[in-house]
Image 1 (cartoon, rainbow, N blue to C red):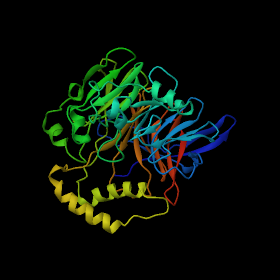
Image 2 (image 1 turned 60 degrees about the horizontal axis):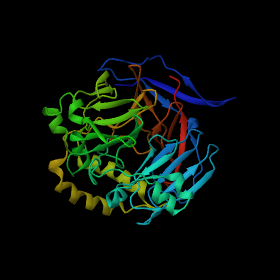
Image 3 (image 1 turned 90 degrees about the vertical axis):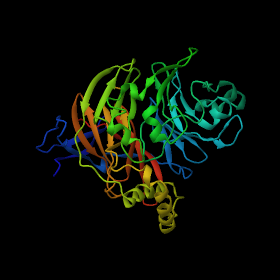
Image 4 (image 1 turned 120 degrees about the horizontal axis):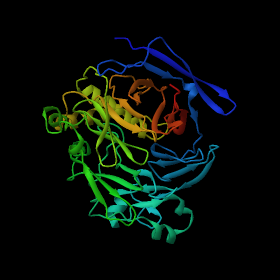
Length: 411
């Protein structure tokens, strides 16, 4: 079936870059079984920020109110701050057990009740509970960093039991920590184990100021059929997983794969709205498809200019794949990543294992119940969806990553 197509370009306006559209004759679809129109975002709409050579792979990013952005690198220096003009302001963060060092910085999040960015380090948390560090404090001396690091109670967030909830089965997993309702929201598994499987039993813990952390509920309190045939079969590698995202400070959106719906929840986890997503043909899990997905990660994390030995990787993969074949789902997950803007627009990524690496990723946006699909240009991977911008990374021909953004589509 051919999908409708719309193209997005940009023009320079007096107030900056403005997205312009050339709309085809097909309109957006709202039915649960209709395939949505595809809107193609032009590469000209992407603005890349020049990054220093030390940046290897962007693990996470946190936009700032002035148009700047914090970047979490996979290796030291871990942190880079860019101002609104794209200039590098801070490059810092080394690995180690010291008061200004980090063990495994994984997630950037707005500090609770502050206009600062914190980093969550799960291993630092496990070593003493002070796993949240204000990035701005790194310029103020070791004593300040040590004293002002935020304690996360181990009884509320047991070390090693953090869960990834925004993208599972593929990609680079990281603990799900979000600024929400005046505090921090953590996803915590009931027991140690593989993140994707634990997501079906994950609980949400809200840590707010001096209040005792509160457990708001669990995934199974929200999902429509968590113990039914589809839910039970999905608790496997590369199969469909539930996904969560925060929308501003008082709303959540959940992808429920048991009924292929997005659920908008209020602060009490009551369902406020439900939108059924389009039905897509299933894609069987095969060794070749899994290898392509895993190889993308290897290529992304390889040192600049060095191509990994794909033959050796394939041999090791085939041996490992047979060991965990019984845990692999029959069909791939339909969606693999979920985000939400502060005004409640949900963006969920289609998992398409057969799409070529040089093709752009496709995302379904749900705004006021209207469904559109957007295809981003090849080489640009969205990571953070703001009201007016979509932040992500671009990769050059050598695999080097740089922060980048594109205006939110005007559709």
